[in-house]
Each structure stands twice: as C-alpha cells, then as structure tokens.
Image (cartoon, rainbow, N blue to C red; front, side):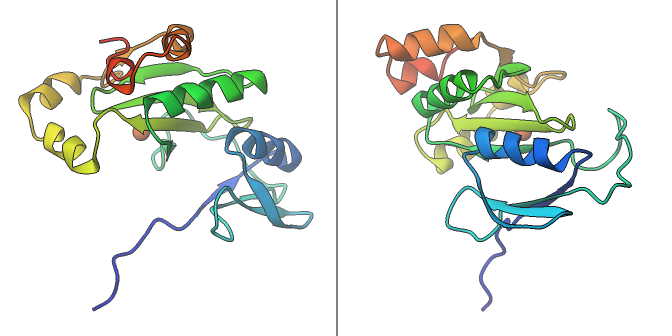
Length: 176
Ligand SMILES: [Fe+2]
C-alpha cells in the first residue's frame, strides 16, 4: 500500500527575488540550496526544498481577494516556542500584522515583501489528537467566528508572560 502523501513544497512568484530570499531566510531560518538568476530553492529542515521563490520579470499584482492560496502556516513546538519565534523575528526587524488565539492553536501572522501572509502557529493542546477532539466540540464551533476565527492577543504580553515563566497551559489561554 502506498504511503500517505505529505506536504512537499510550495512555490511563490516574487517581484523581488533577493528581498524574498532575505525575508524567508530570516523569517523561517531557511537556507538556499540552489539559486540562479531566476529562482531560489530553499529549505528550513532536512528536506532539499520546502519552497521555491522565483522572479521571471512578468509577475503581476495579486488582488487581496484573489482566489487561491490565502496564507501559508508553519508549525512550531508549542506556546513557549511561539513566543520564542515572535522574539526572534522581532530582533530581526520582522513584526507581525496580527496575533490570534484560535483556542486549539495560537497564530502569529506576518507579511512577506510581496504581501503574502505567512503564519507561525503552535498547538494549544498537548497532542494532535487533543486538537482534533477539540475541533469536534461545540466550543470549536463557537470559537470559529469570522473574521478572526479566534481572539486577538498582544504578542508583547505573550512574550512577557513566557519570560516570567508561565507554563504552556497558561500561555495557551492568551487573549481568551
Ligand atoms: Fe492558518
């Protein structure tokens, strides 16, 4: 029997290849494994490429409400790890546009130089099974209200709590 498919990589057209490479290298701690004048193949883990950035000189603007991929989410180890990511990116001069506690997860959203939305997210439950179990509860249905599908939180308050030693269970309730 064939193995289940896994997410492999994504491709992004950019209007400024060097700016995109620099941003993703910082934001995702990613490395370039191949580059030419048109494209860069990059990865942030053991994979040979998790994403390709390219600029063929003919990339147009993407309307905010265009159909297709809306954002790309990257997981991290948990609420404390998410606070670390916020702190790391802040040090690099990359600030979020929005922070939302989605109850079963928390997310910090950024915009790359082309305006694509990049989400860094953590689970607020101990296991994936716990997250899926929550998703089947009435609390999930109540929480998933547009436009935010959760409650906004202050990342500085989040980082302060983490730096004061708050456990993940407390950090997971930020903004609720
Ligand atoms: Fe998302």
